[in-house]
Image (cartoon, rainbow, N blue to C red):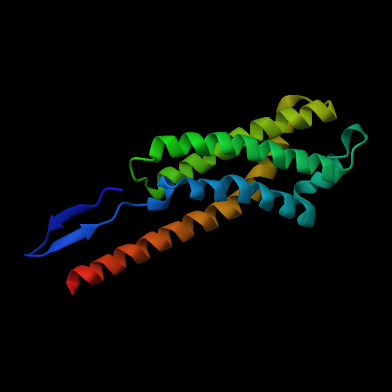
Length: 168
């Protein structure tokens, strides 16, 4: 990433860009593999919004449907994260821009979850959309917040180290 320099009372201060890890593709891999895995584990352990009772359609067990939803999330998030990486690979992003992207990603996954649930349950799409938004927002927001806060803390620590080096 680009490093900006400016002078402040006869000294040069180095400013690192915000969210520098956004520009690395391996960081995107953490998002589109880790968050769906968290969804699978969280859903199977805590029965988010009664998904285990609801996901007994078509004669398949609940674990089949939850695993299929996880696979849908991996595919959608891989596509969205790759697009996000192409957009941000040459410029640093802000944490709030990243959070908005995560929100949009959650909506996109919700729409495809609703398609799947509507297909297997026979319920209307918009009824399934309401349920799927509940599942995704409850399960995806925890890892999103943790990962973004960890990135902000990491960036602040790097910036503080660079300020200390500049002061010395």
